[in-house]
Length: 162
Image: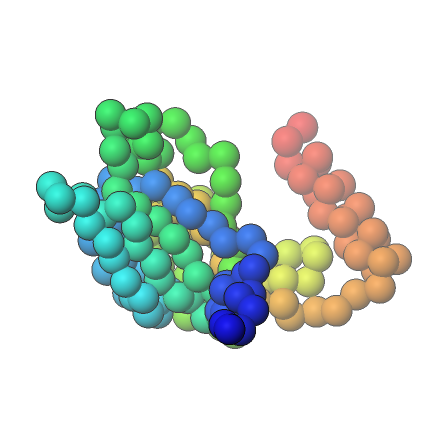
């Protein structure tokens, strides 16, 4: 008799992002350079497309595959549409990871800076059209402190747009 199988495989979280990229081999290389990813494996179709790839970034797994336009599986770079998803990651040193992402070919969407909610936070777009927010938590706040900081930030934002 076999042992019970876990409904969530070891090493995976309840939610695991799975994205579509224009070139999964290049994406794996980018994720290694930008985020220190460990490539866990790639599976190929008979014509050489990557049908499934996995990397591990810190304690999380990211799945991705090449686009297959015949099945409507397309990457943001093909559709030219702005992505509606941001992959968020907490890291020990946001400045270091942000710089690594830029050096590997990412573009700045939102500059890295200290934010009112207590994170050092910024956003980049990878060469495959996906956005990544990179953060290090730097300040714990009570709900009251958070509200005051948010109100101040929103007030400054409104003043700068008037």
